[in-house]
Amino acid sequence: MAAPGPRSNDPETADESACITTIVDTIADIVPKLRTAFETHRSYEGDYNPSGEEMLAADVYADELLESRLGGLDCIGTYASEERADPIQVGTGLSIAVDPLDGSSNLGSNNGVGTIVGIYDGDLPASGHDLVGAMYVLYGPTTTAMVATDDGVTEYLCSDGQREVLTPSVSLPETGTVYGFGGPVPEWPSAFRRYAMSVQRRLKRRYGGALVADVNQVLSHGGVFAYPSLETRPSGKLRLQFEANPIAYIIEQANGLSYQGSGSVLETEPERLHQRTPLFVGSPEPLAELIETLGGKA
Ligand code: AHG
Ligand code: MN
Ligand code: MN
Ligand code: MN
Image (cartoon, rainbow, N blue to C red):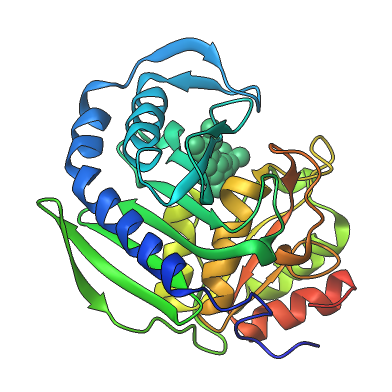
């Protein structure tokens, strides 16, 4: 089984590093506006996104603000989002795939929500190995950003439009203490159900229904997050371009492992912009047990 740690994503160039820095600074700058919008834009719009989900006004607001600010950067060529059918050409340069508001159904109950950004060197849909960087923002009691490049993962505290380093180098412990598994238990594949029975004997359940918040608990405490394939959703629920690839890249850069049923998430063949995938990410030990139980390689 592959040793945990960064996979074979090519090291980013100086220009790509500079672009990633500008993206992170731009997002830190608009975080206050996004947080305000989560207070005021809570109604459903009646419009549906390409994944068939009814969009909140906050989904639309976040998408439009991110498109105007990130799409306006000289180093960005393509902007794509969970809320739009197709990528839009905004210039020449890197491609960004955005989940503007992750966990939007948590907004009404005032639980954690996030924003996820995948930064790809290549046309979309792209392979996870085309990622040169990825980040997420977690809007919790405080607002934090987790930023992964080929140098590793850094956690920032975001306030007043600025960011300051909170954790210079984020690294997952071998085992950890928490697990979070999504989807209705009766619809889990039997092998995953067997795995869940084993894990819940020794890890603490932490599941809140927003990918960013649930993954952040795994990055903070170590453990495993999973959203497996389901009877009614054989390809799982999470989107490869906007959610699974960026999260898998962050986890692998933090010395963890990702898996989608036959290998690393980053190996998944990109076919459609909104394709879904099962997602398993976390510390080496619980992921090794999962991979052994479900078969396949890391
Ligand atoms: P989004 O709000 O961007 O559509 O994402 C929701 C996703 C993800 O955040 C979370 O892990 C998952 O939906 C939760 O699904 P369940 O509601 O089935 O638990
Ligand atoms: Mn959605
Ligand atoms: Mn999401
Ligand atoms: Mn979303």
